Length: 168
Image (cartoon, helix red, strand yellow):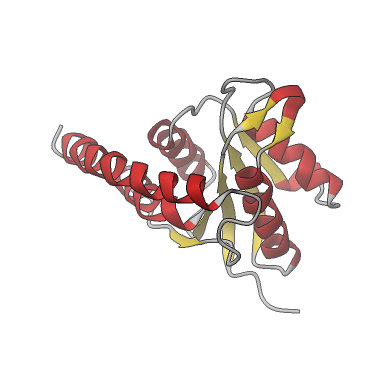
């Protein structure tokens, strides 16, 4: 058994489909995060994501997946108000600072990694990031490329938001 390497694993939300079904991205992120936690890589899961097109919240769906995998509810913290990466980073940062967690790892898909780490760092969280190694498993290649292309504009916008936040 290895020593605990992080205080908290933050899993960034992704779509919840009709009837509360986790999208392939959400399943992929959670599967990876659960393995991290089970391998003693952190003490806590901080699951973030509000209600999108379909209820319940992304965080609640992730909690269900974690508990189905044997993760104790006492090791799970939910953040359910974030509906964008920026708002999730803002709310998670508040929780991280309140709990005095300093070793933070973000889990998200590779196309989303740079924007996610930027958002958390803009709110003072020096997190590291880890992405599931299997890429787009469960997501069509076309949709996977769309996600990558969408990030170009989103990252540009987050740079502007970060500058505005840092120089208030």
